[in-house]
Image 1 (cartoon, rainbow, N blue to C red):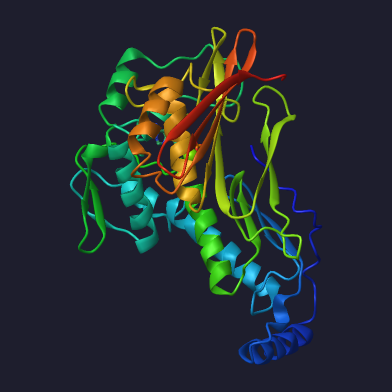
Image 2 (tube, rainbow, N blue to C red; image 1 turned 135 degrees about the vertical axis):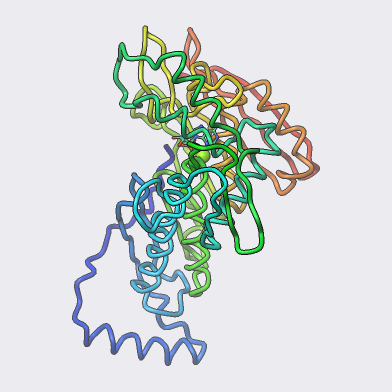
Length: 371
Ligand code: AMP
Ligand code: MG
């Protein structure tokens, strides 16, 4: 999982209302006068969300035109909103309402949910079905708790679950932003894309408030702008985790961009010595067993795209993944993308890097790591 070292410590948020209100008024006055008085900081906020951690960093001199604490609180609220709407649980969740609905019943969803569902369907189509936000019925037959287990679903249960998977059986109507299932017992699962979207949405909120330097990290899915402030133009730093231990296997730097990682080390179980990961291969209707140990995607601007592509490449693997990137290098990834795939092999971890260059060419290199 990439992890940014912002080089900053969380700052206390306790302060009196009067000081905050005065500071707000003064800030509005001065920023409206074009002075950006509130570009002070730094603020680092840690929170829990989407079944993982979140961290928003506004460095000193981020450029925000309001109290940085407020700007960060607004960005955190954007993440919370995505969680509320798209988590599988909770009465206010669009996903839960749709999953509780029998076939043929139309469910109106929030514009944010609509956006993420439409993106998911686009990735489903472009990836030839490798990305599928309806794998829920298969996924719920297994418990990905990192342990060895004897338990295994019956053939009937597996066949039944598979008959309830398929993004082509999710109906949608733009008018009223309505969704409905073609078959009973289907389940929408936005787990492969919602964290990236939440990071983008939080960053949009920060940018709206004037930020030119900021970092959002939602469980290792990152969105960065502007590097660290200052004349040196120092970039943000991130690391890729070794998929078989807690070490950082590789570090990289980024001024603007987005990063997401998917892998078999995050959530999995073992059965007869085989590792089954929480990503389902829609082509076999089974949890992946031989996917890359991890896939990190670095995209110039979209964390949603990084997130969706990382999951897609886990399913496609090295060969089909490379073919997919070549196929899309003048379309989907024409703005450039970099992929670092780590493959656990008998004699160690092999690293494959795929880079879409400015001409839409794809450069691929492969080497064994020291790890
Ligand atoms: P990520 O960690 O972004 O790779 O997302 C993995 C999560 O996405 C899983 O825990 C499932 O909830 C969901 N998922 C599993 N398989 C797929 C798939 N083939 N396409 C889309 N989402 C999936
Ligand atoms: Mg993903």
